[in-house]
Every structure is written in structure tokens, then in C-alpha cells.
Image 1 (cartoon, rainbow, N blue to C red):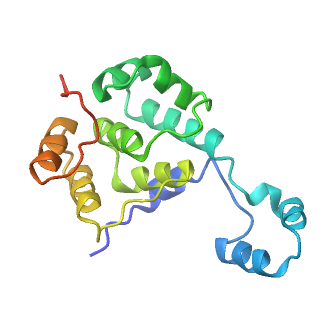
Image 2 (image 1 turned 30 degrees about the horizontal axis):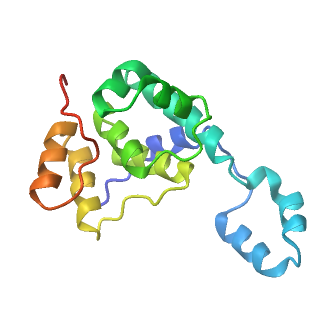
Length: 167
């Protein structure tokens, strides 16, 4: 049974509207002799991961009425680190940090997947047990603390080291 939420998908892509399908880009990569030609032809269809990630994360914080300061405290990261991500200055936040933010915000799975794609990270994959646990936590709106304890009890690395104070 699919749990696909088209509105979440459309909301996520209001920040990036490609002209061509990914399959078209893959085809052109195979057939264009120089990458520079590919880039010149399709520059508007290539992601600027940092800006998209920053814009989408800002959108999620606003949607779920959460400040960067509050989210940073609750995921165990400094306020300045989270502000760098939102500002597009943190070039490579970890997948676990992004997932901890999503769990704490209470995003949908679709919103988490979009955030991961925008960051260039692997989306959640239901066949990987750790990812399936995280997916389940997002679907059931479990707290970050509940998820971290469950991950730890099953031999997996938790998403954050801090125990969530208030949810």
C-alpha cells in the first residue's frame, strides 16, 4: 500500500523545477563528448545542493513552527552549526543530522526524502533495517528520544547523542 503524498512532493519541488527528467540527463551524459558541453546545455537542471537544502530546511522549520535555536538544542548541535546549514554555508551536513532534524520536526517520510535528495544524501531505503526503523519512526511520529533508544537497543548508531527534553 503506497503512502505517497503528492502534496509533500510538490511542496518540496517548488524550490527546484527542472525542465528535463533525470532519465533525459542520464541519456545526455552518455552522449555528450565533454562535460562542459553538458553543463552549458543543462545548467538550469543541475542542483545547487547547498541552496536547495538551505531553502527547503528553512521551509520545514517554518512549516513546523520550529526555530533553528530550538532544533539545534534538541538534536545536540550548536546553534551556529544549524544556522550554517539553513544559510547554505555548511557544505556537508551528515545524513544523520538531517534525519534527526526531520524526526524532531515530525516531518513526513516524503519531506525527509526530499531533504535527503536535496543534500545529495541517500534517501531512506526500506530494505535497510536501520532506515526502515527511521522510516517507521517518521510515520508513527515517534520522538527523537524514542527512536534513538530503539536504534541503540537494536545495535544501531543513534541519530543524535542528546536526549530530547520536550516534545
